[in-house]
Image 1 (cartoon, rainbow, N blue to C red):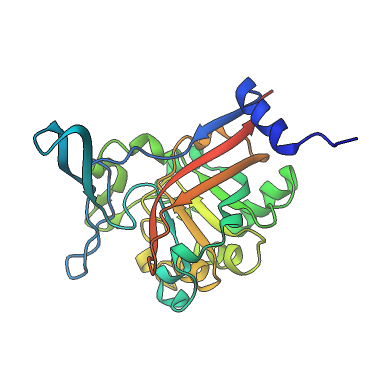
Image 2 (image 1 turned 120 degrees about the vertical axis):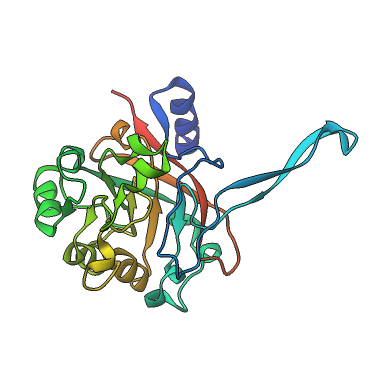
Length: 261
């Protein structure tokens, strides 16, 4: 007697809506906020479309475009070789496909971030979450919900910068080290423009999420949206970056599968 097909059960659940698909991806356009570094450094490009033809004499039956974008523009995937600590490690095209589908833990600090945009998650915060919901998923994602996706419509509000630099929530340096070196997850996902907190240039080390995670061969997902629609545990994330050979990252379509009530 044949066993029921797991894939058939999955597709049936998707059709019936008992498994919901939640899009965690920010729409990608010329107005998508981008990271701004100090003027002495190279800058990432904003997303641009260049029309090739649109049902006209350049191509009477088809519409298509060229596009220009930074690897780290919009919702995107950070590969280990993005940071000097991961130099020589995997590029985005070398990420094993199996790791692009993984369970997720969603830690909600939206209230704390609303009260303090410089809020930092500490190891004790994560351990308190684990006491309530169980251990972080082995081979999964730690997703940090801060409510920052509500600001993604405007560059200035999203970066939230003043003369002291950007003010956005994230992990403390010690928490970043712990996630990279002691936790079982494969990476960190955030709603902000990058995996590090806005004031991270002044941390020790600077940009600790990048430094520790990339150096440990782990990954980043940034500018996620709709994390409020995910449960603390049980969601499965599908992250699809462009497999750019030698690339340090790529724009990604990121989806989550969530079981209905």
